[in-house]
Length: 263
Length: 263
Image 1 (cartoon, each protein chain N blue to C red):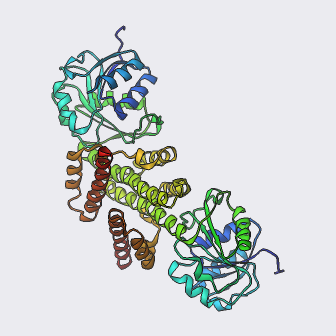
Image 2 (tube, rainbow over the protein chains, first blue to last red):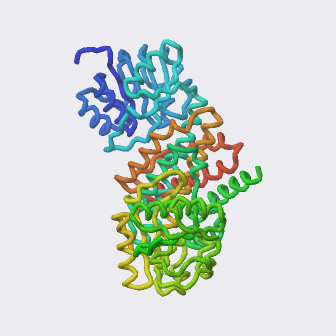
Image 3 (cartoon, rainbow over the protein chains, first blue to last red):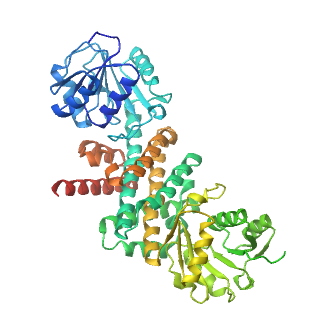
């Protein structure tokens, strides 16, 4: 394969790595190789892009332009240490890991797409905000140019801000999804399909595109409907896990409402 | 005003009453009158439909075809007791109140739209699932015909099922919105706009239209990324309310994941 100016190496063949490889390929970058802990996943992705694959980060060639580290947060430092020294731009894609973890590379940065990636479900990258941070001004410009090929929504955020963005995303996406898990369980026990909630869930989303979340708050707790709250807690008595979540969130909504009233 | 076969009386001028009146008016029902606790809100809505208004349920005329009780759950029984006897179809719109609360009326039922209504934000009723229940077969057919004028998604559910639907909706809508409230707070403290999370929130919705919520679960807890979880809990240490929610939901996701592994 002839060397190009846009050679990329992807480390990590999970959800982020897979989606990123796909996007980079679409944008005419050359996927030079895939490194993954397991040979199967490395080969599977590498086969798709007709490129090399490795399981050992030390074997990654040092002469690519871009290196995307898309492994779990806990593994980023280890992978970075194992990689060969390189003049390429080495980036990780994590919300919560500081940029310093890559400081042994002269050119390094962070490319954090604020999105949840799922295998076998393509995501429209053009709508995804991408948080970037770089080791210096020159690299920030390179990173910005790179990110703009994916999305028009580029956010320069330092490691502290990015950590907070990630934390907020855990609430807004992961925990929200767990609320759907509970709702699904409750309906499933009644042999009712989860799909009956989809219009409601979509409307909840649409409301927060139009107003601040607290203005959009509805339900028994914000209405102060204590008999419904008590009834719901009774209904959940056989599932203490769900009961405690119901109780705590309702209490916090009530508290905030009451605080607002007295202000 | 000349008497028609489609005369409706709305009791309660809150979010549900307002949206329902608007829809009924669009579907060529005649809004005969609005009853509300406060004369202001009754008159405001009545003015729009050029109809009568009352604050005392005892003054409601007994000769309309349909009566929609759209008041808080806690007030339904009281309103129903105060109303005059009527041969019209008397319905409440609550998820959690049993149909029996209306049993003094020969024709009664429940018309529960699974949706969250917000003032000044129109909702596409045609997409809303409507749960119906009626005192007898004849009334169920009348209610079904009525509901089909609003939506093609009609669900016959008894009071026990409806209660569970409402409970699931509290998790999927109200509690989900509270997760957005927390995310908004976290970002706001960093002077970052909540809008950066909207693509992520939309994607979370789209995923649960395609797969079961638990299959769509992502984030540090399901990945077993304990160092990130600890870091997030540290970041929330100044807000014990948010910290406890983070801790409990993460624990439950971890527990479920581990249970799945051992099965």
